[in-house]
Image (cartoon, rainbow, N blue to C red; front, side, top):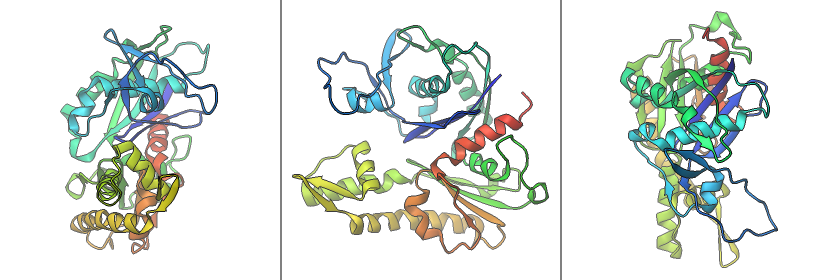
Length: 327
């Protein structure tokens, strides 16, 4: 049986497989148009359209670069959409080994804390179970997904912390520690308490994240420099901390510091409402794509743990849990 962890975020989709390097693509699905010309110089993005219900789509970097129409949904209905399924299948296809014998797959994935209900879990399992209906133009599929386990999204970072790569407990004697998780993503921030059980009363979600900073940055640049940016462009500028105007790099560090602090204060305030000063937490995990952007605001927690490659912590944890699970 093939085992995978798949983390489909509003900003990026991550996938991890046994003995495979994790892969990341932008969470963008777009229309598939025939290109009239492609340059022979520079990087050449692989274009591998996927078909679903008679329609053809580009996914990931190809959609970002070449699609005239991009389909992105920034609310809870996203996990009910065909675009979510297309991202899931694209992630699994990246993990396939050519000419490998077809065998069923088991997947661990997650839902944001505020969306995590048993009805939504069942809905997501049913959707992802249709993965075999998505094909490449050559007829290739991701194969049959037999089992899907859905957990609260930030718990991937918890399992990344407590399990080794084989899915075994690293330190069994510490399994009853109280661990707080702050998972800062593109669109949302999830906070969860693990004891190791999910303590729902001490967990929650915020509709703030990396996008909150990049959107405000986009408005600042429109007002100060008359530049219009879409969401993807604004996020790239946020990570680069500069923008090129008429060929000249403009440093945006001061502007970004102001906007980042505003969002960090919202997250810190919510964390305080759930856990106080954190004195009863044995450890606090800061993970997600926003962990390194916001890390300086969380140094007041002496028990802070930021995983290596924090944006991949959830998907690594999903794979570790997949290996631990008796399917």
